[in-house]
Length: 200
Image (cartoon, rainbow, N blue to C red):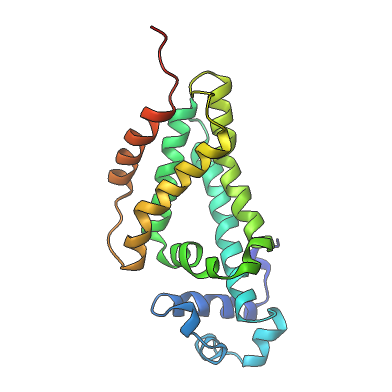
């Protein structure tokens, strides 16, 4: 996907307009006319760059995912050990939900009701992001830091599902999310289940 900074000004305005509107309204309640008005462009211009409103949503999410994918790799640099990397990734993931509620709403609520989302290029970016965690789990199993009697894909699903579960209602109702507090609680729960047990 092209660097967002290289997009034409009109396209950037349209994407930014959707983000602004999502701060106050549900996606289903937003019209293309509202998006055009907020962006200061004609409604026809939306269809020049996007197939429809849903395609706009997917492309906005894709831009977020590419940004956070790069950020996750940067955040993990210099960190040794699978457990430490998982802790950092959990904190980063929760902190993103805490600080970027529009992204959280799109990923946790808006796109999941559309069946074509799961066959879209945007969903492939989600899987690319979650593969970072899978690789760390596999690294931990190889180094005997994480128990290897549970499939790594299942562990990934359990960790990501736990993050989403503790954040979802907070996102829906606009409640505060403490990345530090939730990370500590989740790691206490997760690591007691996945760390390699000492041989007696």
